[in-house]
Amino acid sequence: MPVRSLRSPVLKWPPEAEVVAALRRWARDLDLPGLVALGYCGSYARGEAGVGSDLDRVLIVEQSDQPQPLRAVGLPLETLPVPADALVLTHSEWEALKGGGGRFANTLLREARWILGPP
Image (cartoon, rainbow, N blue to C red; front, side, top):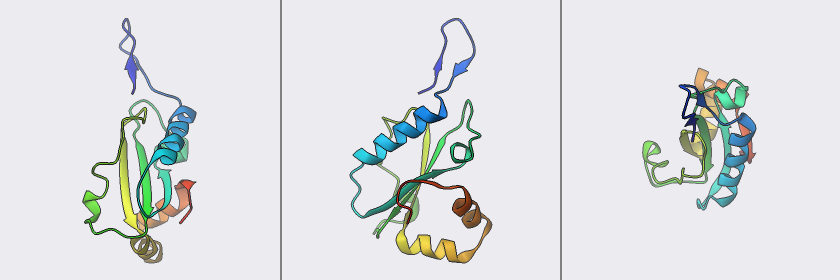
């Protein structure tokens, strides 16, 4: 996680390469049945991350019985060096999102960087 120097009010945030390497290790160690693809988007994918940036992850699974907002609950985050969000979609939800052509879908399709996959 970010650290504050003992004698300075300045936060030191991990470099982008370190964050992406940690995400690759996280993906390798993740035990999520039916995982089809895993990527990241947002400021890290655009190369704009800075102090305070979180890591926005996208996970695509074959199917899920849980409602979409609950799917990320319980994902292990303790090995990631920055705060992280997760959007977990089923493969059919991903296909519908791609076909919908909305602003969010277009942004996600344009900027996502895939560690595993793409879907």
